[in-house]
Length: 199
Image (cartoon, rainbow, N blue to C red; front, side, top):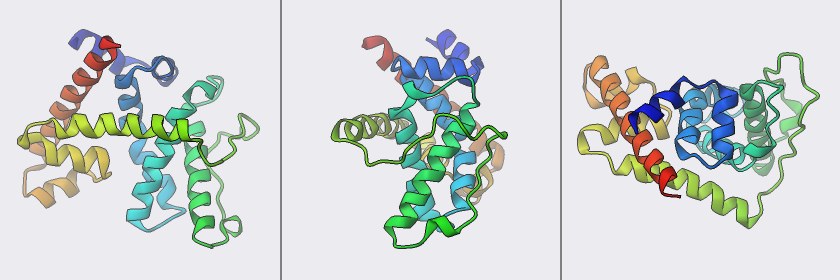
């Protein structure tokens, strides 16, 4: 199992997306871990309230994972993901009655903006089930961690805290936090790979 996990962690985005499109939970987790901070920063520039930003980040990943088979590998995965996040944030602003279109909302797109235009629509019931299942599996895996690792993993993986913030909140040395989160990720990857192999 560990050998497979190490191979996954060495994959580039295109290969990871291909694995995720096959339903590999560990690939989803690695993509989430690789981009959650960038998506948080991107969304936070549009919706500055931290609690709302965290919800939008989760929703953005849920949308991306539900639409993963529509990703075009000719373009960078991060660009595609940030566009989904931007659209989700704009939808959120519109729901709150703000005029999102008046804001400057240019995303990082390497000058390639005419691709895979993603229409931010309400998900159908089946997509909602898929999204909640993917996120639920991550939450279950984190909840399955021992007390030693659980809180640090929750703060970093689910709540988008930085390592330094976690160290201060838990009154732990920074190195200890990094080690705990690293071991938590390794455990979660093993659990998700085992789940994938049972399918």
